[in-house]
Length: 428
Image (cartoon, rainbow, N blue to C red; front, top):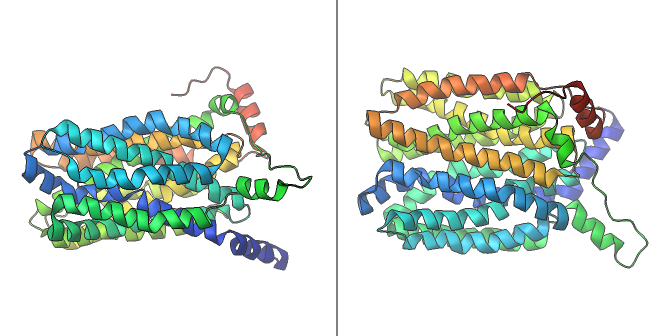
């Protein structure tokens, strides 16, 4: 690396660290409800007599809200910028999370409450934070995204233990109130003072001066939709996240049924979050140097290895530790590779809508996986079929990633070339 390249990298991080920090914190907070759900399954089951399928069906509600909401938020994002959208979303998310304390005894109240939380989650979700970070970095965009996306990993690592502590001390209702208060205290001041994307900075600079506002480069939505690359990325994300979230949401109950104490199970589940932080940092470092298809394909193989360990664990707690680490590494790498690939293949012109589609895809997979896990358990009394299915699904996702096209010289050229070369190709 030359001295000039080093200076450029240092300059990017010196100017952009507040955006990275705020995005990281935002991704911690907006995943409170996702990664704490595993701790609330049994208390809600005991309180209201709901089945695990009914409780985890809230993830289907999340998927519906995400599928409908993320593309719409993407339109707002491309028009108003990430700062404004993030502030509005967090003002909705925090009180909605606390309101989950009021659900029951009817199951529909749980689904409605979860839907409201997810409206806020979509408004201040991964699309918003990654857009702000990616717009401020170029040479080390992958690492910057990786650092910011560690927020979800931190949530995965801390939420099972934090939520379990709150549930044991205040009950499940008090735990949700506590999570809502913590969320508001952490994210609202940080977003207001620190989260400035490239658009908001350019708008500030242009006020009262003859300075042209920033025009994002890249392809249009129709151009991107005509490429096979767009669809390969989408299906790889869908399959991998469905397998991972199905396993992660049911992780604590899986261990409990093998005789492992809940406190120990929650601690092992926390390793998923810690290793996902490592996965984001490692993948972020690598994709600045190695093509994202190789990074994404390699990390997508890890759940198959982890599930093989789980199948042969025989109730041995020691084998669950490396399995949790493998789940976390794959989970950490996925969003980093996906957001980075979106900017390299398609640019920023329609990033909000395009990554909004991917975010909706991730939400769909995250909704399907846990529900399938609940159905499998309710019908068979065990999780073996879930684990075996996850092996096949992660292998297919890895294949899709390894077969991605090279990066284009410019995103517009990629869309043009693929559309002309394969006019009869179908998305599937």
